[in-house]
Length: 212
Image 1: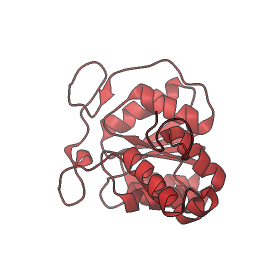
Image 2 (image 1 turned 90 degrees about the horizontal axis):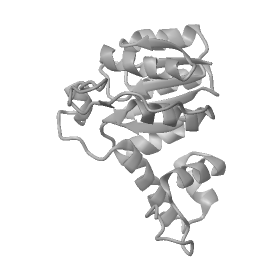
Image 3 (image 1 turned 90 degrees about the vertical axis):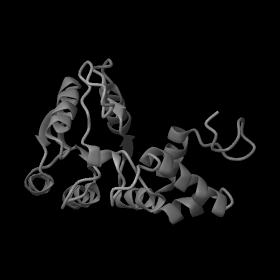
Image 4 (image 1 turned 135 degrees about the vertical axis):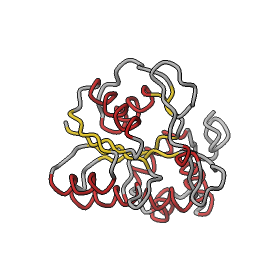
């Protein structure tokens, strides 16, 4: 199984690659988004883990390029911020999942395992982007924790995705087929995302969307 790891911070790209290799992946790591896109056109990958907020070429561009070359490729986007429109657009374009910064290496490995159906290895290392400088954690680029234009970071993409799903479900009266159409994804993909976010239809145990 072949994976491409991309982050414009070379240290983060290297660390993600090492985590994936420890789980049995053959990995090519890039810190230049344009080079990564060219590589996607040259070779086939089973998985792409890409930062979202990069200059010149964004994670959305990488997602589009990956899906254009191989529609079955799994793409995980990494970001410290997000908007509702961005989350919906990423789902429509085929993003498999999101990882929010800061994150642990084990979270990356577990997310990959869930997306690709591979066994997650034991937890490794510290927290990326925490700025603690301890263990194997490293500080992410300051630009990665700010929204475009230099404003403060907003909700994580995971939170934004959950909000987008809840908004579509509420708008469509919890009609799964209609909500899936609005989100531009299949019903099975929507069910999977609802389970991942702990979203339950009205009448089930726990408050809908509460995850409890």
